[in-house]
Image (cartoon, rainbow, N blue to C red; front, side, top):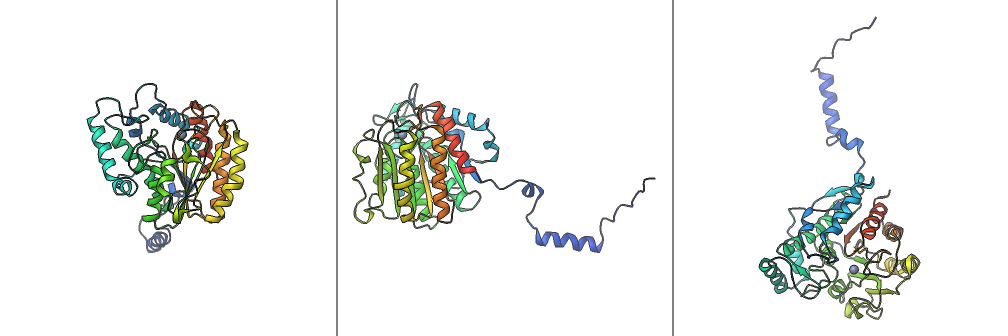
Amino acid sequence: MKTVNAPPPLFSIPRLLFSAAVLLFFPMTSHAQENEPKPRTALIYDDIFLEHDTGPGFPESADRLRMMTKHLKAHPVSERLLWMGPDEKIDPMPWILEMHEEDYVKELKRACEAAEGVTRLGADNPISPRTYDVAVKAVAASLTAVDAVMAGRVNNAFAAVRPPGHHAMPDRAKGFCFFGNAAIAARYAQNHHKLERVMIVDWDVHHGDGTQEMFLKDPTVFFFSTHQYPFYPGPSGSPDIIGDGAGKGFNLNAPLAPGGGDEAVLKVFRTTLTEAFRKFKPQFLIISAGFDAHEADPLGALGWSSDCYAELTQILRALCREQGHERIVSLLEGGYSERGITEGVRRHIEALEKP
Ligand SMILES: [Zn+2]
C-alpha cells in the first residue's frame, strides 16, 4: 500500500533557517548558472554592419558577414559562444579621437550625410549614407570585446565587424578602412583598463600600415605583421621598418612571398613572433584577423588552408597562457572568399573557444 506523507509545513523555523543559510552562502546561484558552463568566447556582431553599402561587385561587401554568420550558426560552436551586440553604453567617439584627427572624423561624417547612394572617398573607399554610423559602431563593438574580456565574462572575443580598420590613417580613410579598430581597441585597453603593454598581431594578407603608423614611436604597443610582400599597400611592410625613437624595436614586419602556404607563416609564428612575444610580455593581445591570405581568396596569394587559422590561433593562445592570461580580442579585417570568411573564420573561433 502506498503511504501518503503529509506535506511539510510551508513555514517552520528550521526551514526558514535553512533557506537563510542557502541565501547567505549561494546568493547568486541559479539553476541555469549551475548547469550551463561559462562561455569561453564572445562573438560581437550586429546587423548594422550590413548597412555599410559599398555598391555592386565590390569585394568588401555585406555579403561577407551574411555568409559568415550563416555558416557559424549552422555549426555547434555557435551555441557555445556568448553572442553580444556592441554595448550601447560605450561612447566610442573619445577613443576614435585618440587615434584620428578631428577634421578627418568630421569630414567623413559630412561626406556620408551628403552621399546619395554609393560614392567614393578616395580610390578604395566607397561610402554611403550609413557608412559613418556603421564605422563608429564597429569601433564600439571592438571596445565591447575588450570590456567583455577584461570583465572576465569570457576568456577571449571575436568581433565580426565591418568596415575593417587596419589601413585607416590618423587623417584619412584608406584601403576599405575608416577607423583603426585594432589601434583604438589597443589604446582603450591601456587607458580605460590600465594595462601597460598591448601587442597587435596582424595576419591579414595586406600590411596593416594604418596601425603601424599610429604606434611607430610607441614602445607600449608592439605591432607585429605577417603579410604578402611586395603587395598592397606598398613599402610600409618592409622588415626595415622597426619603429622610431622610443618605439624602435617595437614594430616587426615579417613579409611573406606569394605561395608560401601554411608552412611559411607557421614557421614565422613559431620563431620570430614567439621570440618577440616572450620578450615584450604583452598583458593583452589584439589580433587583426584578416582571412584574405586564405587559399581561396581572390586578392591574396599566400595560400593558407582553413586549418592554418586554427594553428595560428593556438600558437597565440599558448603564448598568452605563458604570460598567465588568455586576454585576446580578435577583430575581423579582410577576407574576400566564401571559404576564407566561413571555414577560415570558424576554425579561428573554434580554436579560441577550445578548452
Ligand atoms: Zn587585407
